[in-house]
Every structure is written in structure tokens, then in C-alpha cells.
Length: 283
Image (tube, rainbow, N blue to C red; front, side, top):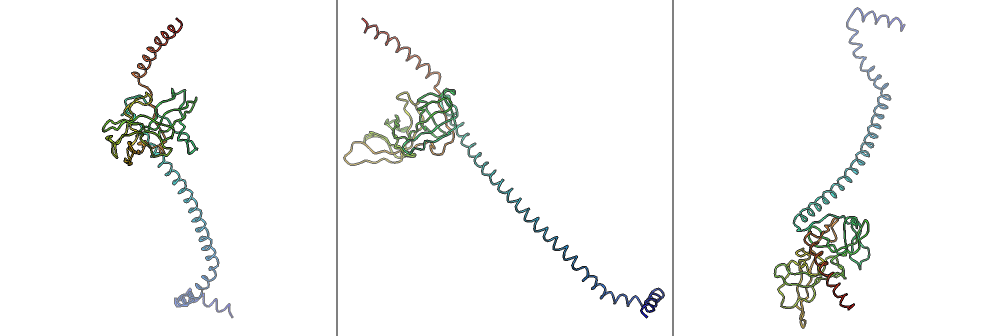
């Protein structure tokens, strides 16, 4: 019976058009059956795609996090290099203003003892460094060389409690002795008469006396002037002009040709005097 019905429908479909309406109406049922039949496969494909998308996103996020970390590290390094370039340019500008031959050294160590204000630099005897050589940064005097090694040297800072030098007020010419206090940003003037022409904000520069430091180098700024009752001298505090706790490079001042020739003449003039004294002693 079913076979007869199927043959009849095929015949009618070929010969007439009204069977198409039946097929069209049946499509609502057959399409729904097809959709339900393919639903597991479609869901599996969608879930797989979503899983791959989530995994890809996780991998992309991890990759981007690594790249961000690398870029942040590079940015930090670039900031350090930029700051170092600024300091080096300041040093170069400072060396151009100085009436002396200078060369740059790098700070490679800091004295850990809080009672000693000292630095280590990467220049030694092979670089013509000598004891007593003046050391500066872009803003002023830092200290002097106290120990020379073959590859490195030790710098005694002006803030060390054992350091003292002759300075004068740049504005008035008043001279005094500037000593360190052991504090990295505090200096003190000794034996300043209460009649001295000195005020807060005055610049203190080297005098050149003692032949230790060349004259005219900035050393400190006066930050406090106090008159203590019953005392003949003022209490004067100053702050170093050099960035002692922030500098990474320094300038070493080499003696000029005129200074070397003057020292040579002084040494030569001292020799005959010493010889005459020895002869006098023998006689």
C-alpha cells in the first residue's frame, strides 16, 4: 500500500504542480528534523570555536603582558639613559666654562661608613690622576683625590668632617675656612667675624690659597647666618652647590701648563737654596 502511494505521488509530482504545495508544507517538518539532527554537530563546532577563541585570547593576553613588561623595562632604561645624557651634557658645558683641562670619570662606589664621606671613581694612575687633584661636577666642587690606585681612585668629599678648604664670598670677597660636617648637604664656615659682609644666598668659591684647589670654583651657598649672643664670630651654615648624592659622573681638573711651569720653577728655585744650606752646614 505504501509503495502504491509513493508511486502515485511521484507520478502526480511529474505530471501536475499541486504536489509542490504539499512538499512545501512538509518542508516545515523536514527542515525542523534536519536542524535538530545537525544540532549536536553545530553545537560541537561552536563550542570548539569558542574554546579555541578563549585559548587564543588567553595566549594573546599573556604574550601582550610579556611584551608590555619588556617595553616597560626598556622605557625605564631609556629614562635612565636620558637622565645620564642630561648629566653628561651638563658636565660638558661645565668643562667648557672652566679655564683648565678636565676629563670625565665615573663614580663606581660610595663609602658605606656613615662617618666617612668618600667616593670611588674609575680613573687611576694610568689616567694621570694624582693625590690632591680637584674633583667637580656640573654644579661645583665635590672634593679631592686622596688615594690613587692603578685603575681606580678615592675621592674625599668636601662634606667629610675631616675636610677643610679656604673659600671666599663671591660678592664681597670675605675669606673664611669651610669645613665639612659629615652631613651630605651641610657645610660650616669657621671664624667669621660678626662684622663680616656675608648674607644668606651668597656664593662661596675657592680662593686658590694653599695650592690645593684652583681659584674661582663654586663650592657652596650660604643658607643660614646667625649672631650668637656673647660670641665674636658668626654661625654660618652652607649647602654644597655640587649634587654630591646624585652625581654619577665627575670632572677631574688637570693642572694647566702655566701652573705646571710655575710649580717647576718653584721647585727649581728651592733646590739651590737647599744646596746652599747644606754647604753652609758642612762648613
